[in-house]
Each structure stands twice: as C-alpha cells, then as structure tokens.
Amino acid sequence: MLSMYPACFFHENNGYSVIFPDLNWLATQGDTFEEAMEMAVDCLAGYLYTCRMDGDYIPEASKMSDINPETVAYELDPDSPISICEAIVNMVSVDVDEYAKIHFEKSVKKTLTIPAWLNKAALEQNINFSQVLQEALKERLNIV
Image (cartoon, rainbow, N blue to C red; front, side, top):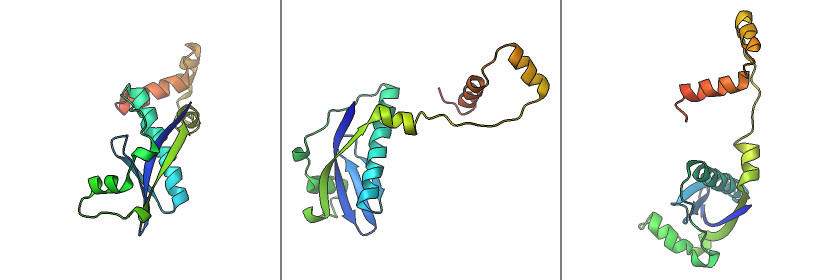
C-alpha cells in the first residue's frame, strides 16, 4: 500500500533540507534535489516501518495545500526566515512493505567458522544455524 506525506524541500547553499511536518519534524537532506528526494523516500519508509514495528501511532497526512513552507521554516528557526522561492512542498510516496523487503528485511549471507565437533553436534540436533546466530546477535546487541 502506498503511503504519501507532504514534505518541505528547502534549497540551501549546500543542497536541500527536507522536513516532514506531519511526522514530528522528521528531517533528511541531499546535495541535489534528486538526492534529497531519494533520501526523503528512504527516511519516510524507515520512519513508517519503525512505527509499525513498534506499534506507534502514525498520523494522517496533511493535504499539500495545508503545508506552508514559510511557516515550517519559521517554526524551525524564527531568526532565519526563508523566502518562498527557496522552498517547495512536494508529496513523497513509498510502498513501505515493498521498500522494507528490499532495504530493511533483506537477508545477507555470512560465512563463519566453527569447530567440526560443534558443527556435527548441531547437525545431529537439527539446529538452524541462521536462527541461532540471529538470536545470539540480538541478545548480544540487546535487541528484542
């Protein structure tokens, strides 16, 4: 399912800053507009995916027409207002499930070495090596 949120793209001296006002002022940036858009998609996907995994509330998206980039810029930094010609509001969309399959949930192959006797004992017990390694890493990293 496609998720869409408006984002403010602010053109700055060193590239573009991107702010999602609906999502707790979620922010990213890119050196070019294209890179900023790619980063915005990644940022949006990561935020929504994490909210889903944690069971956190996900607010509804505002209409693009309800987002004023000058107001957003002022709320971020009242001493440095930005002119409207240096900012645009654009809709950023991502299929979070598809994005997660490629970027967040993709498994990587690891090669490891264990003593032959340990390998034999584990095989005799039908141990799933990948599952045991994942569980051990999560425990070591304090990841639930």
